Length: 150
Image 1 (spheres, one colour):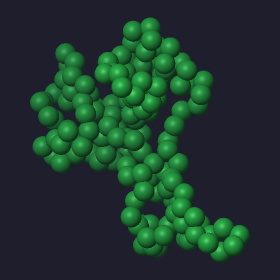
Image 2 (image 1 turned 45 degrees about the vertical axis):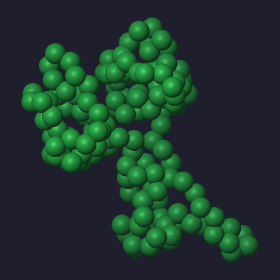
Image 3 (image 1 turned 60 degrees about the horizontal axis):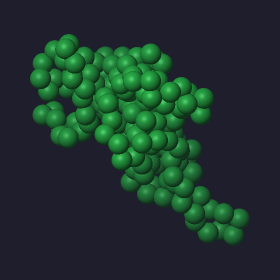
Image 4 (image 1 turned 90 degrees about the vertical axis):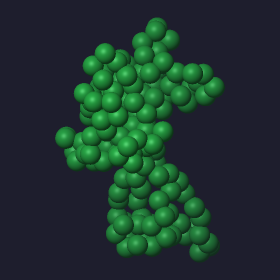
């Protein structure tokens, strides 16, 4: 869904407004206006809301950065397009995917138990202290075809 400010994402609606979760730090923003997507997170200044966050590292220069894209096109440090292509022992390039920010198996089990007990995703995020995106990711991965209770 495209919001007026150009951000992609989804929002949950409650009695107090739409809730947006920062993809970087997990800060929850409750909007007082319809489609009131904040310009940046007041906690970390990120402009990315309600998306998975990937940690990337360039194999050429070692620069680390975060992205909402699973495979960004260039390294922001050295601008190479082959930032994720390490050479194996024979000198051939092999691709690797950036690590996805995830939760421990114990925490994933706790999240699924709370969801099975009737809690919605927003309540679970507040209860566990995890970002909405992480909780949403765990639940959607375990229930790929189910409509989720946000």
